[in-house]
Amino acid sequence: MQHLIQQLSWRRFAALFSVLAAVTAGAQTCGPSNGRPALSAPTTGLCTAGFASAVSGTGPYAWTCTVLFPIVSFVSCSAPPNCHDVDGNGVIHATTDGVILNRVMLGMTGTTVSSAAQSGAPRNTWPAIRSFLNNSCGYSLACIANGQDVSAGAQTNISTCVNAVMPLAVQCCANSFTVITYDNPLGSNSCVGTCGPPIAAPNPESPTSSQ
Image 1 (cartoon, rainbow, N blue to C red):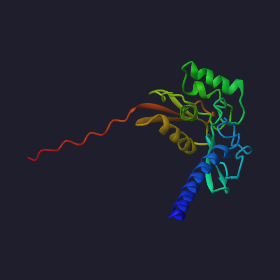
Image 2: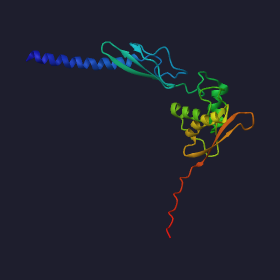
Image 3: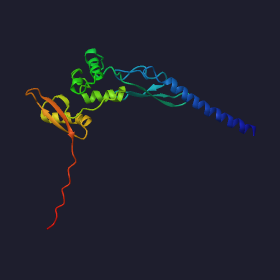
């Protein structure tokens, strides 16, 4: 009987040790990059123990630290994007990112804001900037209103213009009609979609009375 009690006590101790070890591993395994705003996917400081998985995401960035001793544990770590790099080019510039944030805080929207992004930056349209600030930086920016434009920049032809502007229009012209204007003025290859009023549901045809 005493042997059985000792055996049960040991099992409880082992279970408690496993729980404490897992908690300790989780608290000490993520490296200094965990929770630190990053301009790009971190490559160092991922784990203080064990080994790191590949970093995924475009901000926030996520990875897993795997520890094999004293027990096998998998710890999730992440780093938020740096919200000062609004256009997403990996560099913080006063003349681009600073101007964008300043205009947003002044209540500006649309191309008035996105025109300040660096040419070729990953986030150089208003829908992309708005989505980043709302989803990653705690903003609550309204979408584009009727009559405002969604710009897809310069496109080589009308077909590429439609393909480029429609995903942007879907983000900020939901349930509304978008007029697409291409190459205005001539030679600019500009591609712009204009948000319009919500599309009205078609009225069903009235039944005709038989004579």
